[in-house]
Image (cartoon, rainbow, N blue to C red; front, side, top):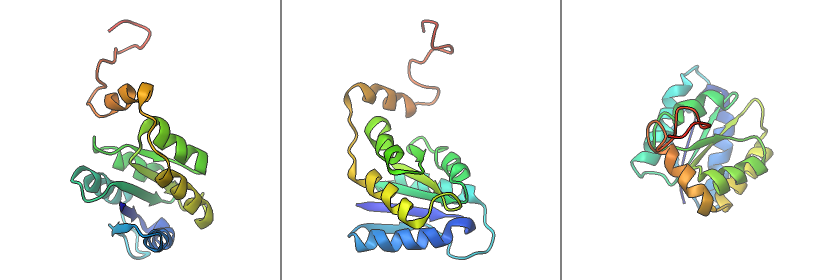
Length: 156
């Protein structure tokens, strides 16, 4: 599988470890940076994950920063990206099963290397369930939510 991975300065060590682990597992890894400890802006790296998924350079993405929150928000600015913030394997698995997430975000200050590997393993080995979830996933890919009423309790 082609996997794009990116981090800010707070998660560069975790990114390096996960990229090596993914390569050992036979994956083609697209390392989008950063490569050092100098302060950088996490949105740039979140946008890079979204772009790699949108243009087909990657099948899945891994976005890392200190908390995982900011880089997930940035990655999700691209409509082709469905990035879920995860901190344990169950959330990573459910992100795939129910939401067809094509990227996960993790916080290096919150998730250690072994837990990050467990999350990534669950994410990569879980298939999308489709069925009743497909309509909702389709709504995520359209600006404004296809068919969504302003108030879900009111008819569209």
